[in-house]
Length: 375
Image (cartoon, rainbow, N blue to C red; front, side):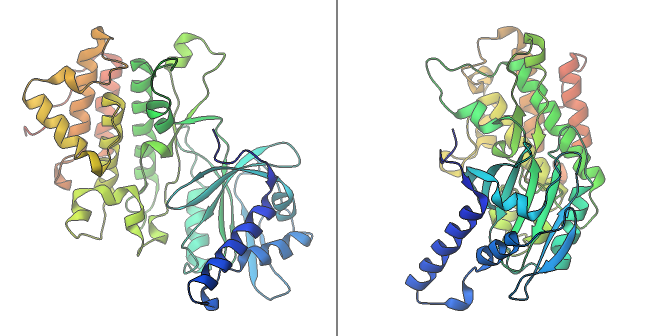
């Protein structure tokens, strides 16, 4: 369920956020120089006849704004159409607020209004977005467009009708809930790993870690309604919120990769192995049904302890523990997850090896990885 029910013009959303921020800054001491004034500039821009496709222009205030369109096959629009379209708030995360926007012509897109990026130079932002805009993989959400002004940064994604993995695993538990069955969970695990492997193989060196923000709320699972039972068990998840780490050198703590042990020890140079650690945590979520939050302790350490004391099936989510014929596969995926969540980065497997291990489990052809902790 969305956080707000009413549909409002996207421009109105930006104006509301603009005035809310300005009033907050007045209350905090009148630091007018820090005010985010981009919403007003964007409204001025929307009043102009913006050119379709890529291009940059200037508002009356002389501030340059820019819309870049990467995937016209997904949706083709200009700034004027974007800002008069209706918007519905989907979520509010550490990177920004996300909206579902319905364009006049009918297509639905997802717009994320990025926060804490006023410091990012145009050149760096555009270069990063151009790299991300070239990505095409069935397990990675397409970047459709981006918008740059000094005060406002927007990214536009394809709309994936469905739920996040977090919602499927954790929301509305109890009577009347339809559990996510094991075959679907294993299919999601395989798709996540494949999408992450693609990012690791495709993104250039400066995108380290390539995803940087992998968590269950950033794994989108399309609707399976109206499909056969076999089709419902073959999920095609899509990774989103990837590739922002190069733009956040001073705000890396806001990303999921900051959960890895090396970051907690003071390392501020995260490698690709940080993504692998995050993948391990999401795999553990799939198996255990538990949220890997600090308040509940270390999920990976808890799972290791359970396996070492032969409490193996005790770690399984109550919604799948009844599928006794697949306990072996569940525990093998747990071992893969624990390899990924190793404390030392150099003991974590490469994501391509994780894909292979999960595919072997899915095919029923592998004996699983070497148990965690034995090398």
